[in-house]
Image (tube, rainbow, N blue to C red; front, side, top):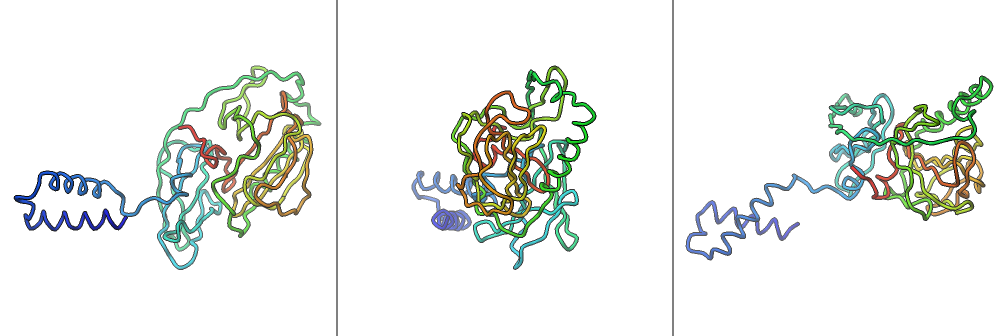
Length: 301
């Protein structure tokens, strides 16, 4: 902000030399305001990505300033590689996914070369959701279904752990479907009265057959028809930033396809463990499932 900086310099100089004596009260007040404003500003203003994504709570995202070295710094959190981008061509930032299991307090990232940077994780309260499922096997599966679930979980975990070199095409995501948000991320879920894992994604209420669009460009790294998730697609957006879409009625892509931002992935359905048609959308960063609402500007503290 050059104009503000110039006015601040003038005010500072006049205060230091006491040249404000005898000048108008209005200028005096203006200079006091500008000095206070400049003292309140950070050394550098936050960039757009930082303002959008920095929500450091369990299940949220921390954005950490890495300075401006010549090359992209390599960063790890909890032993896993982290997405880094050059924000506004001014500084490198680490975009860190925080697992829901992390407790409020101090966390650290490790930068290649041995540097450790700390950041604070705040508290967030997640509400409860109670769901009735007619198919009891989807609440307490038998031994055969448990083996299937374990096999499918391992397959999906490997997909979440992929870390490609590509830069994400965009970090302000498009909504994958046109429809209201229904079940939010992080809900403590009870199926037929029995507590299960918290809700790891964001649900959109939409009619069966509604087209699902890629929120950012990506490569299809996994397709499946799973016990809980039903028909499912994983998209790799780059550097550990991965979307998962499930409960689809139809899948419109093939493994290995490169999908442009806004490209069709499939159609909304109710396959797997679902009480009705909707889209369940997961976003994962450094193998941590985080709140997709952050990436579409809909996060609620």
